[in-house]
Figure 1 (cartoon, rainbow, N blue to C red):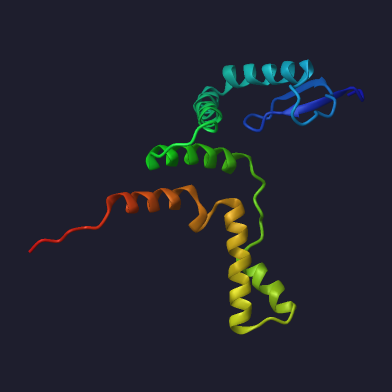
Figure 2 (cartoon, rainbow, N blue to C red):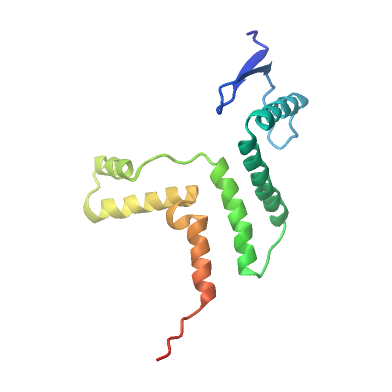
Length: 161
C-alpha cells in the first residue's frame, strides 16, 4: 500500500477496502468530497452484504433527524419533552466515549489516598455519580428519567374500601 492509500475493514465480514487517505477534518465544516465518496462506497457494501445492519442504520437516522428538529423547540408537554430527551440520549449513548472505570477501582484508588470508612464510601459514591451522570447510566439514564416522568404523571393513587 502506498502512503496515499489506507485500508478500511468491515467489522461484520472483514472485507477490506483501499481508498485515498483523507485530510484531517475541521470540526463544523462539511465533509470533504473524498470522505463523502468513501462513506458512499462503504454504505454500498452494507446495502449489498449486510441488509439487517443497513436497516438499523436507517431507523437510527430517524432518531438523529428527530433530534435535530426537536432541538429547536421547547414544550410544556412533559411527555413530548421526554420524547425529545430520549432521542438525544440515544444519540449520546451511541456516540460517547464511556468512562470505563469500575466502581471497585474508584474505591481502591481512594483507599490508596488514605480514605476509609464513611468518608471513602461518600467520596466514592460522589465520583461514581459524576461518572454515571456523564455516561447517562444508572439513575441518570434516559430510562430512569422516563420511569420518573411516568410515575409523576400518574399522580396519587386513590384507594377506596
